[in-house]
Amino acid sequence: MPKTYKIHMLLETLSPLTHMMGVSGNEALINREAVIYKDEIRHLPVISGNAIRHKLIREPGAMFIVGACNLAGKMNIDQLNYLFNGGSLVESSVSCNIRKIADMQATLPLYRLLGGCLKNQVVAGSLNVHRGMLICSENAERISSILPNDCAIDSTIFPAERFIDQYQYTRGDANKMKDIDFFAAIDELNTGEEKEKSHLMIFNGQTIVAGSMFYLGFVLNNVSDLELGALFHSLSRWNGFIGGQGSRGHGRCKISLIASDVLEVAPLIVAYKEHIMSKKEEIKAWLLETFPSKKTKKEETHAEKLAIDN
Amino acid sequence: MSTQELSVLTPEQFRLKLACLNDPSVKSEIVKHSLIEEAVDFVSELPRFYNDELDRMQLWDRIGNGLLAAASKTDGNCELFINSVLSYIKASPTSVAASERLAAFITNFEKRDASWKRDFIHQFQEYNYLIIVKARAAWQTKKEQVKHA
Image 1 (cartoon, rainbow over the protein chains, first blue to last red):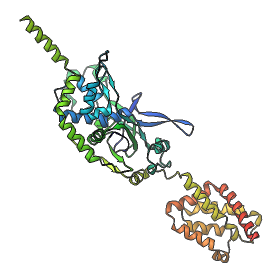
Image 2 (image 1 turned 60 degrees about the horizontal axis):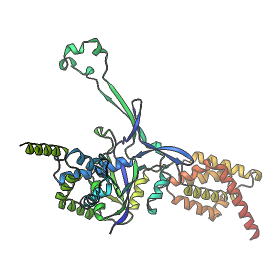
Image 3 (image 1 turned 90 degrees about the vertical axis):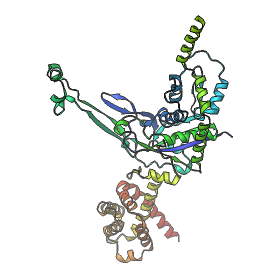
């Protein structure tokens, strides 16, 4: 029996978080959104719902399906786009896709949840993703209004600006290397132009400090246990990084489920995994039918033409 | 490839996790209100110990100054604070010893943690006038009750 679930989660930053919205000069600016707080507009750090949806759900979920169905190295770009990015409309005419959609919903619960684009039709998902709200005094009331009553947040926590810090890195210049003469061609180094040119790059930006916390929320509208399992399965396979500068250790996070009532997560995950393992062939067939390979079509046409010629 | 343990927090564990984000310099409205009420209750008892040798017209001036002076030098020590205020208004040891209300205040303050004591004393600097006004009103009510009794 389909049910609607509200899932509340806490995201803790274990290292500085750099979820950017743009740059000012050579300084990266963190993503913010305007919020009305005590009759004033405040710009508070936020993790976009888009990033949460992609990094925490779609990407790990798609990775699992590719691995389970042994699809690595065998997919065309349309299939990859659908699985990893939600696909895109590439055909203008809308044909009857009801059977295809029904097949997809039966075999791929994760994609019933997320929705996506078939080649000529947008299929709505059943998942609403909250924006990741920084737990700070300005957001306390808003977050408390979403959370169950027994999880209300005290407004005496620090304001948002206390959670913002700076970073600076330097990308070195090979010219300054010790024993540069040994590594570089001397005639390259001694030209006037090269001598004066500096390759040193200093770049900096804003971060959310390690130890900050964000509220994450999901609403699953009229879903089965398999879809709920798909969500938890993807969350449990997330690599723990979100935002930029991950190569330098930024964006390492930990998520926890805030449960006011008992929700058995493990059996839901197991049921979802078993479902995918039992539907491997149907998944492959659906992907091939919905997003047929262009190359194969061309080759077939060419082969057909040759057959006629002969 | 399971890379992220999906732990579950009960509402209590969630609130405990957020406790580390609390700004110690900010008190919630309820806490603030309760601290002021306790301060008013305490200060409205002080006129009973005001020494008769002192000018009665200066009663609230002297109490107010005594509170400020005590708050500035007692660094979160409630016992020292009470002692300092009583000295400032030259309370007689007999009246102090006879007061069950004062004994109750002292016992109550002893039970509180260090942060409460610090906040309690700090508010005499922060809300000095407010406390004096409310304490005087409370003292007047007490006097009326005694008259009618």
